[in-house]
Length: 260
Image (cartoon, rainbow, N blue to C red; front, side):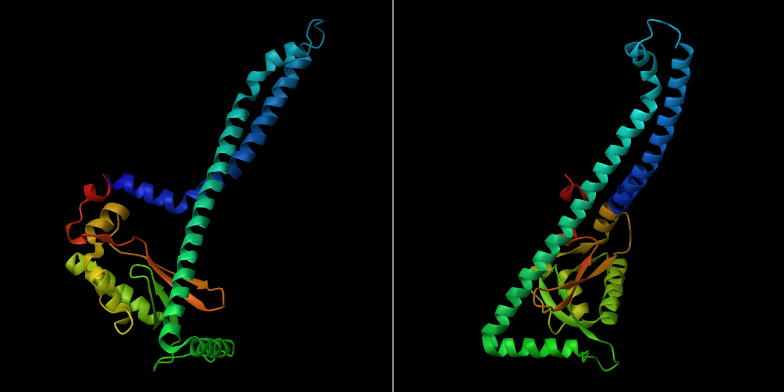
């Protein structure tokens, strides 16, 4: 069971690369087999060149089987190319969806800020922030680390933190999984930035557990991605995403519940 999931995880992660390599190897092997078949066919035609009835139809009838290996390899190569293209399109679609979600959430965030402090004031603050960013006069914490804008998709909220703080929170996330076997979205957000990512009722119902990690990822450690995004008006933001999405009723997680 674990071996099957490990293979599936490996193929999901490296499937596009493997298919691209397979297509490249297939092109070379197809050319080699075609050359071999051509040599065999030429020899056979040469042996029968003095036969009066040996026309083109007879040549094809005698030589077509020489090209079977090349045809099989060619078909396999085409399959690898199509498969690689389909996987690439899925990855691009996934990234595009994440970017669209980020953009929509950011626009909503801006509207909420404008409602609280006024449209003109929000525009003024945004322009000042843009000028400061261009001048590389970025905000830093007491240790001199740059404070960046992050987006947390589980709670669909923005927060400010340094990259070292986020990496440290990722460590505490995995420590919580290892010691308690589970962690809620609220607990995760508290590790990231308790000031901006406040507790919500939904955050207690959603979370991750060690069984989910083992069943779905065949691993005991959650990996995180920090994708740098750029909004339409030039705002830099990092899309923070764990390898697995949180699930409802994570405390009672079973493989059959989510993989029926």
